[in-house]
Image (cartoon, rainbow, N blue to C red):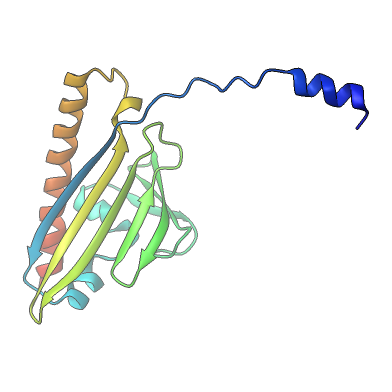
Length: 161
């Protein structure tokens, strides 16, 4: 690189873009399942089971159901991607979400006949529209209510005979 060009590039001030601080909210939900972990997980591990839990549509639009990289479309409009997976959990993200939204569904063994369902949501409340504190609190409350109902539906599905 010619010396003059290098000097000109070096003289350009490096001004970082304005970065908004994140206010990550975590909503941990759980329920005890009256079924062994392996039995419960087999009943609720499908990535599109969310359609049952939320009484809506769900389709796998890319990849293989339950595998990292699979994409589901919920209610014909929300795309979610599996970003991590274990033998009894998966974590998904909404790649186009401005709130950096993620969720994890997990079943853990408790004893021979019981397991624990953990459903954890994480998102950036500062990126919500109208992110005033009262709106953030209302949003968290609404998400908690919606996903508490989903946890009850997952529990019922996992315990079904």
